[in-house]
Length: 113
Image (cartoon, rainbow, N blue to C red; front, side, top):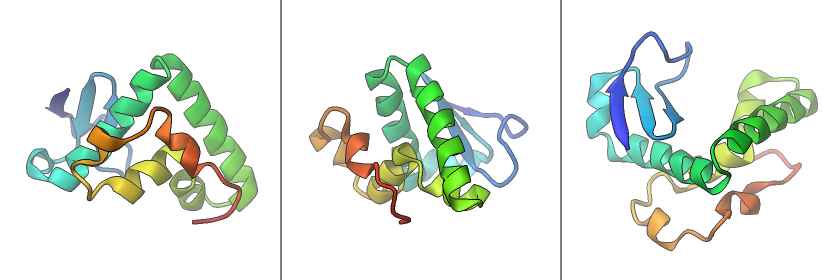
């Protein structure tokens, strides 16, 4: 994993973005934020499991489905299974040690969280 501060690559309203094997950060201080870094590490693991390109296809398709479902960008984003897994476990720095393969599948649901 390579942490790179790239303020202008990060979309407005976000602090970071994982693009295997890089994590792009908006703010330098997030390099020292264990919760933020763990969230992005979870995304890197998801990307590896899906062999990178399929991750992005699945991510965008699920976002579109959630956008139709919720008619709200933030709710759509928060309910993508990859994001739900990362947000639910970002505080657990041991999560990736115990995480099951394709763990994001446990977070696919049609219900709002």
